[in-house]
Length: 264
Image (cartoon, rainbow, N blue to C red; front, top):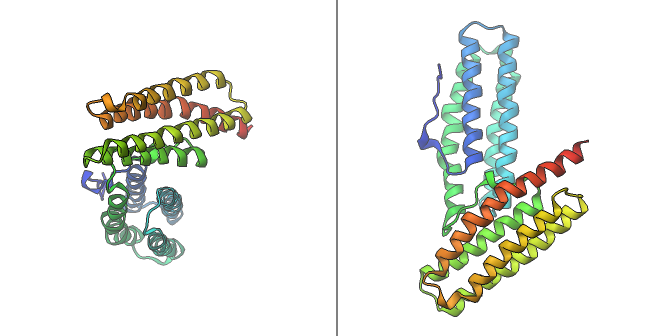
């Protein structure tokens, strides 16, 4: 039975961040249950160590995501993480002297971690999502820093285009925004293929063809821009149903193959 249950209202809106927060709750509940059942100090301490270690992993992942996303309050967030981690690590060091380590850990979860999630984490994600019509989610990361940053920029360029159309900007301005998205797509595809070529990706030829098709479709939107009833909606269709699908299905597999080779 969970002592502290996760609630949907705690979700900050990023899949990976939310899943990691849920795991922190689950690790705490494991610790609490062990202590309440009278587990030995050694067993209980191992459970707390697991919580401490995963907290460090989560904080590192979250900061990497916020850094890549350009969070303006990044330094403040890093300082908050440092303080939270320090307090939890101190509990671990004092474990053998604590009368009720599960209660102490519960205090940390309820009075420090949860307020951090509902406050700074919520605020951070609100800042990142401000003015974004199509939001990047860290679950879209394929695992290569350069590729992931370029994918994020494609989303940013689309959001600029969408904003231009939605606020009724001159069609020339909107078409220029689409031109920048098209040019950066070409640049990104060139960089990605160079990386996959150097990594000897087995499906390189197929990947090149998929890039060609994606670029051609976006080019047609650019060519027909003035004839489109809603160019932003058409570009959104391309982003969601073509580019994002390509990232999640094709790029993910490509990077898994490359990572597997590197681990051999």
